[in-house]
Length: 234
Ligand code: PGA
Image 1 (cartoon, rainbow, N blue to C red):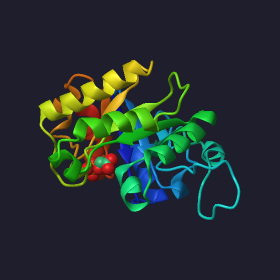
Image 2: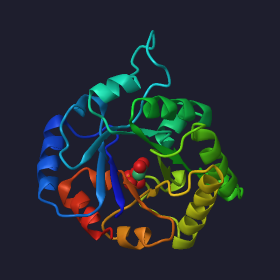
Image 3: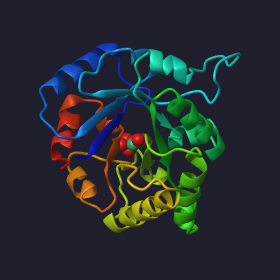
Image 4: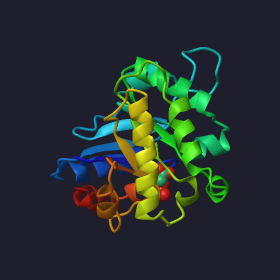
């Protein structure tokens, strides 16, 4: 069983989500499928597909115009939420501390956070990849968590770029994440790979050790792209 999570980012519509869910209804798979959609598309019944959000406030409630709390997400039937996606870290200056607070809020509401970590091109070039990943995991995962989280390794330089790291680079990154989680008492936490995943490369990627699934951006938007990914990931 692999976890196949789609991240629609700021794309799609309620109608498109309806089309995707009807197309997915007839797919036979043992994989766990998740779709993380914009806030306005939440509230739908995903059937066997887990519906999630792409961000959550680090605050409980109050004067935070434009933000959406974990309680509100739970009310809108979100089962998952992506936290610390590289686009949030990059465009909204989210630090590991903020990401950890967001993950904590989600967990308190019974929502599984998909906590993203990954290095930029500059960090990769200066040999900091493993440090960034390790501190990303240590600092973004709330204390006293025993299960109910997912980690996503997203090499930031590869997202949306149509390029993927080598199998060895993915294996090395996932090994460091698995070791860090194990040190934190979180052995067995699923670790997803995310960046430029498509139907052509997913089988090879999920065959890599410590890769428990994938987080898919662009290729999760259309049933004709997303369904072959679900079917190819074994
Ligand atoms: P991509 O995005 O699949 O379009 O590279 C991945 C992500 O941002 O989660």
